[in-house]
Every structure is written in structure tokens, then in C-alpha cells.
Image (cartoon, rainbow, N blue to C red; front, side):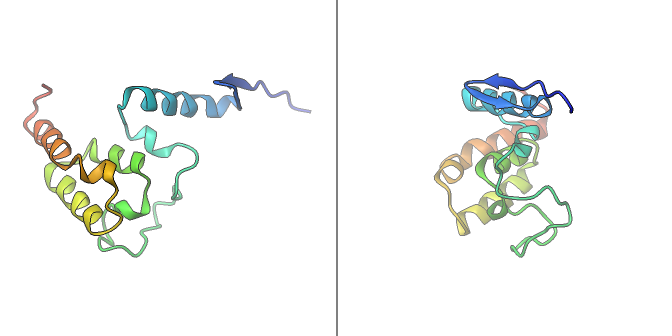
Length: 120
């Protein structure tokens, strides 16, 4: 019988292969910093199947309606200004989640800074 070495984080037991994702989720919640890795956390609304494009307006791009807020923010953390505007426009027409729509100017400014190579 295999021996599993479960680890406990904040009172929740995790398998060794899930510990890193649990810690990333915890860091993201505390710091507010999101990465692409955070988009693949357990409990997301979508599957990781790259062939699953859904039936949104974009067909060939990222559709925010098919993802949770963490996944959308992670995508926007690496998107250029045009992609950021496109995704935020889709969000405004669709679910219009407050956590995304109220941060439109901030997210577009971050995309501009990335494009110009400026970090701050």
C-alpha cells in the first residue's frame, strides 16, 4: 500500500503534488499578485483542455466569461494593451464582474507599462 505524506496548510490537508498550488493560492489571496500559474488552481470554472474554446464572441481568443476572476486577471497580467481592452470589453458586455470592470483603467495602464518596458 502506498504511503502518502499529506501536508496541512491552514487546517486543510493536501497531497504533496497539490501543496504548491495551495500555497500559490494563499499568496495570491494575501498579496493580490496574480500570475498565470494562479489561473490553474483547483476549483476553477473551466477545464484545462486547450481545445475547449466555448461559444463566446472570440472563438480564437480568451473569453473572460469562461473563466473565473483569478484566471482573467492572470491572463491580463501578461496581455498587451489591445488584448486587455478586448477582454475587458467582453467582460463589460457579459458578466460585468465588479472586480474587473472597476479596475479597467488600472489594468490598461499596467498593460501600457509592460509594452513600453517600464516597470514603475
